[in-house]
Image (tube, rainbow over all chains, first blue to last red; front, top):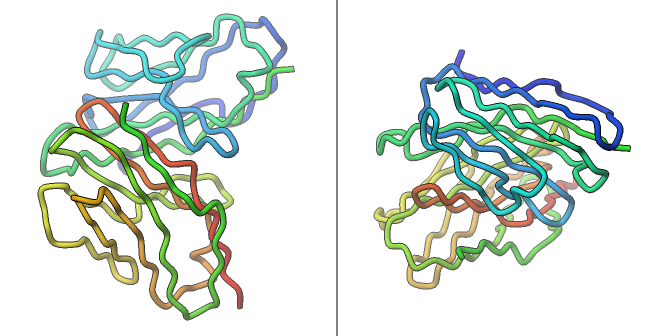
Length: 115
Length: 112
């Protein structure tokens, strides 16, 4: 089954304690990205990756890091989480072929609370 | 920067009736894609419908259809014969190359 898997799904952590949210896709997609969803703001892009070893900032990259060492994985790293990073996070992937219509496939979301 | 605007934070519809959700976007690109995603209470993001900008014909998926007005940069979603299961948050989205942007969402309530 084609899917994007992110873990953990739910996490409560304390300010300053480094954490990583993993993301993996099994569709051999080149493009992967991270979004955060906050009330009234929709989804905002944090980082994206066009392919292995190629990453770039989205609209709200401050406080986050990513890496793309393998095509299937795209972890999101919060080096020193702060309460304003409390949010619902989505990992997503996409093929770049025209036939796919550039459709973005989403993981199930990760609820992160920083206290 | 490209922006996506959903001017209706909330909408309601009677079961079996038709409702239209509005979306406008701003872009200088000629080649792009537009999407509507549904987010039920589970928070899962579910693709409802997709439209390629180079296609003049409006996309249709069963009870869901769009009214794509490229010159006006408008992309509305029409839901016919609304069902209780259609109740959700709906996001309009734009994609061009690496740029993917979402509107703030419209919460749809379906009344029995």
